[in-house]
Amino acid sequence: MTKQMRVVGLLAAIAVVATGGTALGGNVKLGPVKGATYTGAVHDETITIKVAANGKTAKVSLPSAPAFCQGGSGPQRQSSKPAKVSKTGSLTAKISYSSATGASHSVFATATVKGSFDTFSGSKPVFAGTVKTSFRAAGSKSCDGQESFEATKL
Image (cartoon, rainbow, N blue to C red; front, side):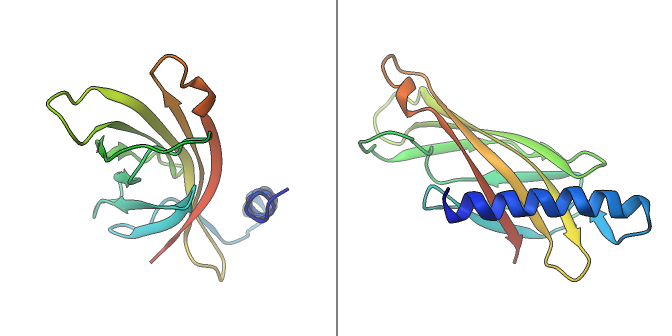
């Protein structure tokens, strides 16, 4: 088990305990900090989540599609739209990736980011989530995969 997986597991356990504590008067804030930027790491790339000033949407940026196989890729162009943040602080966003070179910009991969914003008493606000990558080309399904991550408010 990697260190990152242990951290995510610990955070999940804390979230369960904190959620139970909320019913008993604990101090957990669900939802993002309005106008904040959260950063973390996914597959050695920086993931950035920028929350709108009203806190109702957030834009997710990840420079390249995480590939869970051997090999490399050329320059990538990412495309995403702001995603809605639910009243409970959860978010699902999709990022499309296409080649950054040539005339054709057909999408070759998508990354789906799912997770939730939480602030535990005495801690920095966090977004705990997963990134799931799907590649479209025949034979590239072996590169599909999923990774958990945590992004903290700057």
